[in-house]
Image (cartoon, rainbow, N blue to C red; front, side, top):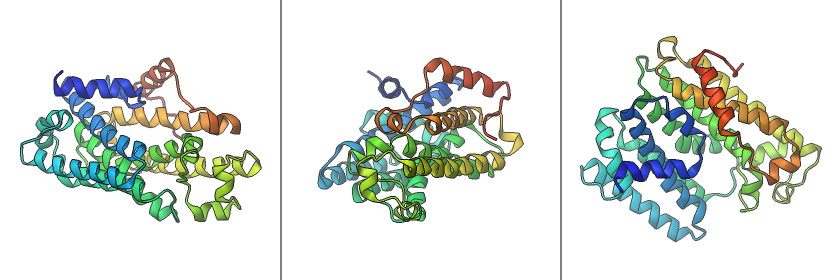
Length: 282
């Protein structure tokens, strides 16, 4: 199996919402995005699966060394071997990869976030940085597009937090900032017990409104001259925005017990709609 095949298998196995957007890329850009996604998947699995801090920390430290090897032109892992030809082509700086690893280390260090400022740093590292690198791969003319990618990354991550609130609670993990829970008069125990009352509905509405603000800001900041080149990102934005709507419309029982997903046929319809200028984010 070649490094590119390894990365493609990683994407296919995940059934990710991102896969639909990648099919509209050129072969070269698709390989770059597959490799970037595979890297994120590798290190995210460490944060999700390692219950012992030292094991997780050692694995992330290995990846820090591997990223250095990548930029020294001597990668060892299939993912970094696949990334190698794209580093210079798309100006993917080493600091971006370190930021992602720092974000994954936050998952090892924290299972609670005191404030939205702290959560936003986490979202920046694990999602916005990926968005900025993706925007570089897609191509742009106006550096303002980086601000679009930054805000879109926050929006996508907040949507993931809503979707996974039940799954995270079962792992004793709460991403909703504690100061926001306090404002809504919701205790940590109510989240962990997945108490489905009116306050839970208020929480979902609050998170949905917060995420929507970042989607709208992202779209506002995308320069007109880069809308076509950033089409894959816009496809992801529309898919996730509709996913956000589906989560909000779902019952509390389903939100905490069943992962809200969109079928491939619907994602394909959304992708086609995006190509023809349909705007769901408004």
